[in-house]
Length: 178
Image (cartoon, rainbow, N blue to C red):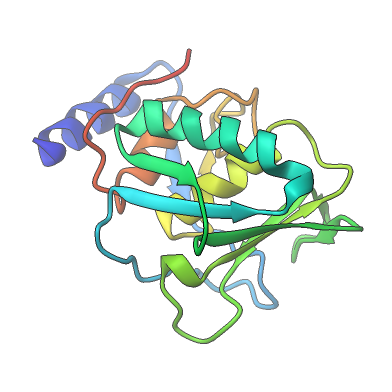
């Protein structure tokens, strides 16, 4: 069922009026592609945010949960989501409001850390959660409205975002927000 949904969604995106492709980008110290091993069960992901961004993280988790059919929630012992004072700098030299990374060599999805700038844009937490859910630093290219476009798009979870995330997350549904 999951494979059929991915195939149908991929065909939908491929047949759209504008071509779309997925591109791997890294926010680490190198510009190599980064993909993290996933944990089991793959349709359950917990995030543990700083108190300052608890409500925003709960909202983003609920949105991803509704879009994927997975149990994505806030709780103890999950992927750490923390507030940092300053924006980050990407390898391309642009400022980033958030950064998802593996602090140790070969960590799994549950070992990821998400840093969120104190003055972050509204879509930042949901965008960075998308990286963690996909276990990848990949971005959607050629769809500037997609949440997983490098700028966070319009903030809504769209078909290209679900194709990216549900490649590694065992989504039971793929429901867009727009």
